[in-house]
Length: 472
Image (cartoon, rainbow, N blue to C red):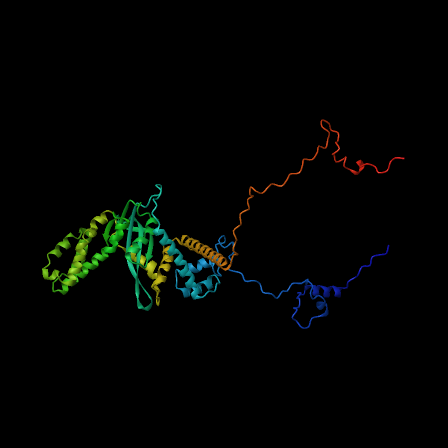
């Protein structure tokens, strides 16, 4: 046996071979002029390499299957960064939000990106609240009881729009009435645990949309409810729709304002009045009610009562006599001022939408108000969950719509071949005769025994054939 020869490879040869194997392989095109001899010899044969210069086929838009599980939103921001961006934009102007994000999180975004993402999140919250308000009312379980005493108030505030216009923002404030005793033994009425709802819309639409906050605060389940308003007609309709049995109170500062304007109109008409008449009248109105003041108004001369300023303010007070029973309201522990909604206008609306140099598009006010309500009501986590769920719902709808469009495009582009109807199978006619049957094969064994007959296969073999040569 001869010994096996083993080729020994040097280090330099190994290095050259590894470098050659690592280089990408490219097959020359048949259109190239300078083709080496080995490749010319391979023309017409299957090439062992693959052409790498071809373009990949175009693909459509796809989605990451873990987007919903990871709570990812469209864009380049992480979920927590996206939430902080919208949260900060609800507190401060968009330009200041850009600087705060870069300082606190190290995230660099443009002011337009902050504006777009904040308005988009607000639109999702607004749409969810509108759908909830339009949903049919469902009776609460018997175990859940509302607050014992609730107070609500509504009013409007104006915000600047582009092109020098103004829009009225209607705000509803709801709180729990509590009576607290001071150190000197007197009692004070406070309204705590306030929540708000604001929209730029007409009075009828606001009455319907405010159903969201009414259900959340369980105003219908409350034992007693009071409504402190400025006496506007649309507010009376608002109370009729949501809680018709509420104790209706005219805001005392509004009553004092109309009484002051009435006395000023009488003074301008030439009537001599004491200097402290306003203070005495307000004290009497607060502690004794409006009956005495309205009786004096009826005794005015006809030429004074018909004056424009006198007739307007006197008619306002006379029409709202039942709403100015302040001694009774204070005795029952109800507030007589609408400070809760006045502070709501400053906290919810003016603090964010009425800054220096701010002018808003009308369509962008309600999305920001929806975010402001979530912040001022201390429900930001709930509000953000609404944003995420609405965003995922819209993404699923867009995916379904794109899939349906692709399906319709494929069906319209494909031209299926016409299918000919199958011809029925021919039925045999009575005239056609059946083919003749072969005779049955003879039995292979003898009748009544197991011995083979002459027709057995053994008998038909070559061994059983007659012998040609006779035996000598």
